Length: 335
View 1: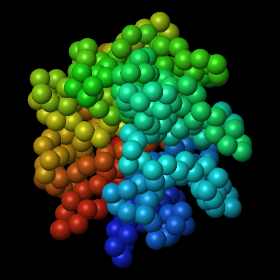
View 2: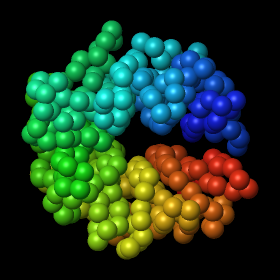
View 3: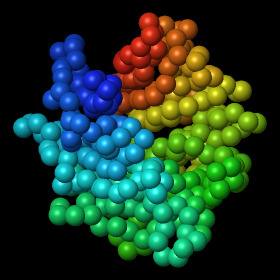
């Protein structure tokens, strides 16, 4: 399944489609909660029972998002997003959040906000757990609530919910993973970043088929955003090889999954703005193996928003590609 935003009649409309019988089947037309509002940043998530969730931002203006809404695809169609909606005036919040479907197919949201306990609080991250009639909100995950935290990525591992997030000033931050056991936060190992207190972007946390947390992220390496991946071995974080992206080549749009054999697979965009290619690679126990070269339909076209779906049925990569004056959605099956 893929979801995307299309500009139609001056509005940003959310659409989704499912691959079926060799073609793409539309899933409900315009999916915005309100047809006259603008949608942004859709993400698709598999539920543990085989269902599919869609989460997105929605607001009345392109530059002002005031709702984060979720919907579950059932045999009867999409559930109403209203009951799950998190509504805030996000002009005064961090605007970074993530969604996952946890045990019992309940929504989990990692949420960035402005701390409210004292006036000097910077941005803080907390976990929101759907309880059937409302959201449970955990204490802040920040190791130091006086230090800004942002870019959460949430996943469930057994009875615990894990959050990967960035803490620190933008160019002097660290990447942490902490676990919520229902009562308190516990830190998993040490910081994940290669170089302490540096620039980190877009961490993505996933649980592999063996139940091990795996994190992909971008980190500054000699002035270039570089892709790294680490896996938790039960005691410590073990980096899977060195940089995944090419040395000296700007990486962006990280996406992480696991192939039919449970091996980590990543997709990303690589290169400068205006000439970004789509790349993918798989971890083969000791090294990263490229899955093809540039995946673009046109190797000279600009791309962004690389997104990967991987599991028992194979590996697919979706992205946006510019050609003939328009951005178009592309999907390619790698195996």
